[in-house]
Amino acid sequence: MACICRHLYSRPSPRFRHWCSRVPPPSDRPEAVEQLDMTWGFNHVGHFPDDHLERLRAVSVGDIAVVNLARNKATGEVVAVRTRANRDLVEAGGDGSDWMPRLQREIRALEAAKDIDGVVDLKRVYHMGQVSHMEFELLPGGNMLERLATRHVDTLGRSALTEEQARAWLRPVIDAYAKLLAKGIWHGDEHLNNVVFDADDNPKLIDFELAQFFAARVCQGGGLLNAGPQPRGVLYYKSPEAATPCALFDPDKSTVFSLGQMLRVLLEFGHDPATRDLHQPPPKPSPFYRTDLSADVRDLIESMTAADPRMRPSIAQVLTHHWFAPSGQWTLPSAQTPSHPHPDTTSTRAAPSQQHVPAARRTPSTPLPPPPTHVPMRASTAVIKTAV
Ligand SMILES: Nc1ncnc2c1ncn2[C@@H]1O[C@H](COP(=O)(O)OP(=O)(O)O)[C@@H](O)[C@H]1O
Ligand SMILES: [Mg+2]
Image (cartoon, rainbow, N blue to C red):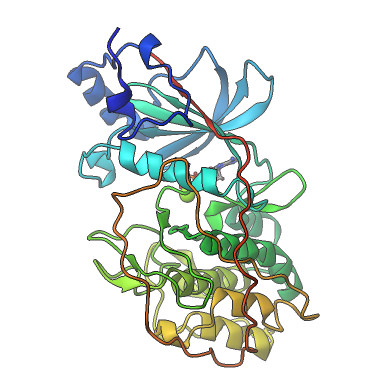
């Protein structure tokens, strides 16, 4: 039987299970692909890996991906299954190009982040002819914006979250982003819908579809990334530099901007008219509408979302900022050389930044993190290729 590894992997690796001799090549006829494209928006996910998973119900239907609740037949565990088309659908704004390099990058990022508690656990991946299914641990607590809008608003639908609650929600999220950056991974789609609570109310990062790798450095001002010709993401949270086509930018400072906007939305949701449509870029300037916010949090948000990345604090400085860590107790993640099951040689990587990044306003100076240490990764994600 023909080997389809060249269809599934640009660089087959023994790290991912290889069942190439047993799997027939994808057999979808062109008309079947057409049919999937037409029905994607109506929650038709094509072939489901029924041998392995029992589909229970839909959780979310997005432009690119559908998330379903399912039961793993082998383990009995209820999991979340994210399904996405194997092509960059033209109907969803894509260019119809091949999917595998991007999916591989997403898997690599999730694999490399397995030792970070604040990142969702990817368990298995099922590659079908038309779609790929990623099996994740189930996070039953809902996403952060959902939780804010349903449980923490006043009678007019405006955020009633206190600064203390916002701090408790966001601090572990910032910690997880800082650990990712220390490994040389930029999440690339940082917003409140991409943070979901687990059963113990711990927030976890999901959706690594736009993740990129860069050369992490121990010192501030590590490697730069290229925004690419068509930057994607939710505009309200996206830093100006990462939203500029083909711009080179510092992933650390770009993440800080997005986190500043996340904090702003947590506190200003419904008060600030700009929070009604988060797919629009933020207005300049962005005034504060809530009158009960402390000067500290306003200054912090303003410095995190400064238009000039050099005026923003680094993520390490945010973590040690006195608003986020009143006691000053916070362990900074150390920069690590990322280790990936498939080192990506195709992504655009720029030379490390040589520019001097001045300290941000009103933030204490940050001690250098300890030297890099190797953190072993957990067991690799099983990739299951299923004939359709
Ligand atoms: N592991 C998970 N457990 C529970 N719900 C999830 C999980 N992953 C995603 N979701 C839900 O699905 C929504 C969309 O997921 P996401 O992966 O961001 O897809 P997309 O943004 O491409 O539509 C999330 O905001 C969350 O509500
Ligand atoms: Mg998402």
